Length: 57
Image (cartoon, rainbow, N blue to C red; front, side, top):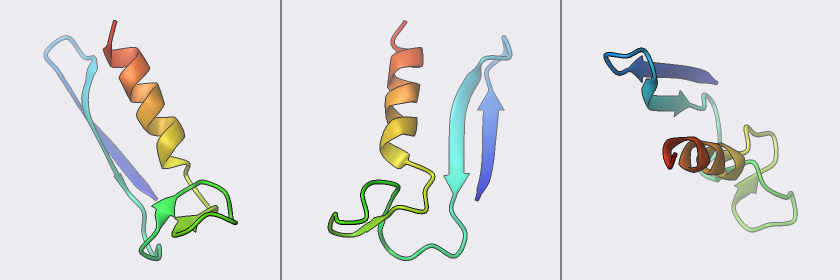
């Protein structure tokens, strides 16, 4: 996985880009019993919630 971020003028993270290398066409993270999920992670749902909660303040 490669992750990069771009800061705004104050240094706070403005944009995050996560590139999951050599991953099948599936939702990253999640339960192995789910349809089209890859439990090897990172957990995309957890990361999206983290971003939404930190950016809503």
